[in-house]
Picture (cartoon, rainbow, N blue to C red):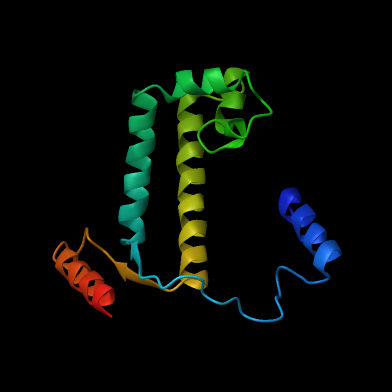
Length: 149
């Protein structure tokens, strides 16, 4: 309900087709034969890597990039994680440390939502290559088997 674009799209579909996008009448058929591989790892490891990635992005010029994007406030990029958080910094309301923590938090939350969506909506074969690097061989074997079938 808080995502205005999604609500508008749902209303458009309902008005055009008379059907709800959240409760389709029948399960959509697969258009393609696919074998999907998902890479995951323990949540604490994932979050630590996200935090480190944000630090790396800051070191490589994210602040300057956000200053550039700020000139285009209506752009989609200006609304993205890593840019929108800088607005209070530019207006002097928050420190760079606070902004970095917000970017880290918002990135972790986004990663959690992505994983939840993938786990609930799609049938992936999930692998953790950080904990089990030998699983790469299993992935190769599964893909070869899928290609042969």
